Length: 352
Image (cartoon, rainbow, N blue to C red; front, side, top):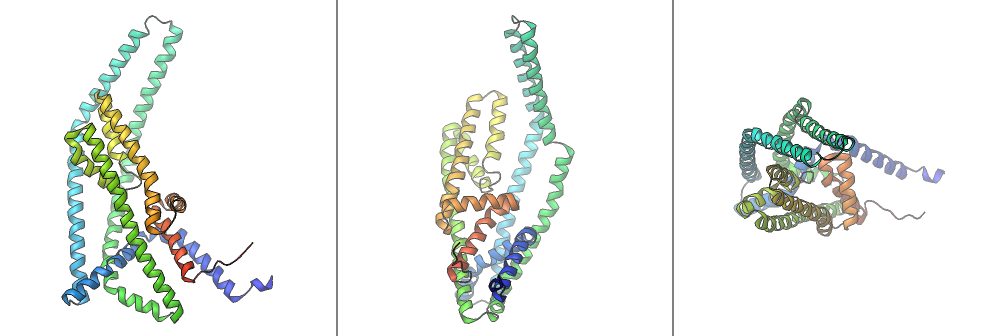
């Protein structure tokens, strides 16, 4: 028993406890800072290239690149918000027509039901009518629950939180881009030569993982774009180009994906009476969902160095524990652990 109570084991246990505490309590509230650090590391080669190419001072190079990135973000947000507001206004104007169509469809269904069941006894008709009434009431309650005051208020209160996090992300990104070389020097100043080599190996490995992750996302999104374009070209050629691009952009969001576009579109066409097109859109949505859930773990695993099963497991656990960002943090933690083990910082040479 006493052979386990050594200074080294105590330090390792303390590190594990701190890591668990950080993963549960600190990382979820530090997402903007973590992403700004990863983004600064990702942009660092571009900053060095600009410094060496045009012989600029680091502050000028960082400021120029940051302004370029900020301009791109503003343009994308402006285009997205204006398009979204325009679509919301159009949908709001068309809501009465949608409700009238739904009411007409319901009245028509009731009249047909009464016509077909007029020859049946009351013992059969009453349960059928009751079931239809329950279905209509459940649909009405579902729609009202989606549009209730508490849900809308919760959504509105998340907007300031998002803006604050976004501003923190931008400010932290700019400062980290400026101070990244000094932070590296500060880190390596406290490391021995052998440990410094191991950390350099980890940093280079993490850089390759980040580029591999971006490459994997690009490959999966291009597959989704191709399938969406071909599907919409066969279903609705008029909107194939525009809607395939919109679905391609939205599909980057793992929680929502293409379903958030195709499902309401299919529901609207179904209510309007175009059942054939609505069914085709629903099938396309299912195909895209299957592609995203089956291809993404495999492609991401091949690009970031994890097999598909650990990638899927870590993405799922990260999603359940940390929400949307857990999809990225889960595999990243496993890669960090694997890289530290390969570098010799963490040793797992034990047998049970």
